[in-house]
Image (cartoon, rainbow, N blue to C red; front, top):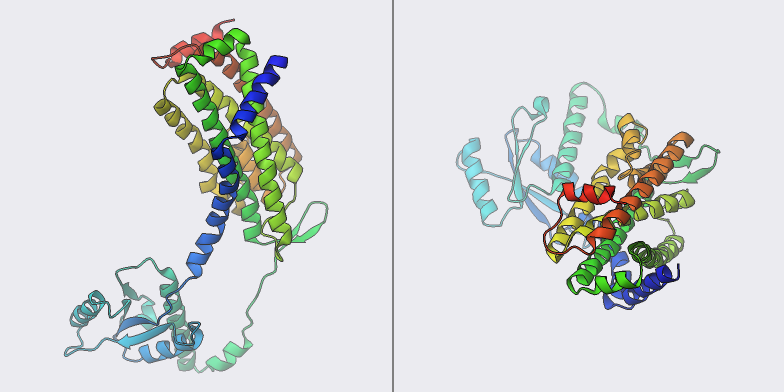
Length: 415
């Protein structure tokens, strides 16, 4: 154990002193904050000048009404209207002729884009939008909603109803979401708080596994290439060396997580509206630590079989894919956390930590699911650690050609 602790202390001290570790300690929370804040700021940002939008109105009666309604509802900070509609006109009122005129004005930068309102829009409800940038769905949605309101009002008028009276009778509903636990406790929580609770867990685990995993593999590759590993193995057993590396890097990772959690809790408490919920924190930390140990064992197994930096990067990329997958599944899982597929994926050990974190942020799974997932995860970690120890014992002394699967299986059968 003394040799194991000596290796762990050396791994921890050497890594914690590096500039890369200190920079990463502060850069990772900053990057995560950018990922969370920047998309919202970009989605809310608008041009500070009025957007000129063209309209080919085959009905000859909707452009003025839509323009007036848009100017009433949407204004820039300066007070100017956000949009200014101009009806496209020409010598001929044929659509193709007007499209040529509108496209020319679009190409010259005079228009942001233009809409084509067909003659049968009252029945079909279909409108065409043409622009160099059709990705700004906000402008299209505002125009379509405004046009829809005007069409509905005109339909009501033609049917003998008073649109103003109906609009006055309609009440907008603002839903306030309250999360109720199985014990009856109530806390106010919205989708964003729920989403970020699971999302931040996945991001922190991914950054931690990627950073410490890469350090572990690079350390092994460097020691193998410099023949230092032979000196180390002559001073201690391969088991002591592997245990020391795991312990040292785990302490390094836990130090990083403790620092990140301190920043996260401080920011969360200081905000008027917390952006994450701190429910089930003990269970989340359990999954976090077990998930980290599982992936560390995978990195050790891979790291012992590679001899070059290029091979190390390839192996790291394969493992990272397993961590990125739950990010793509985050929203569907939160919308339907009790579906059969989600429950099955939660019991797949490689996905268990992240899937259970997402589900815990929405609704606590049944006790049998939690127990089963922890048992399977524990068994997987034990199996991977055993595999890592077998591969590490032989692989650290082999350089040159990377061993194939058949050779690795032979290592596992050796005593």
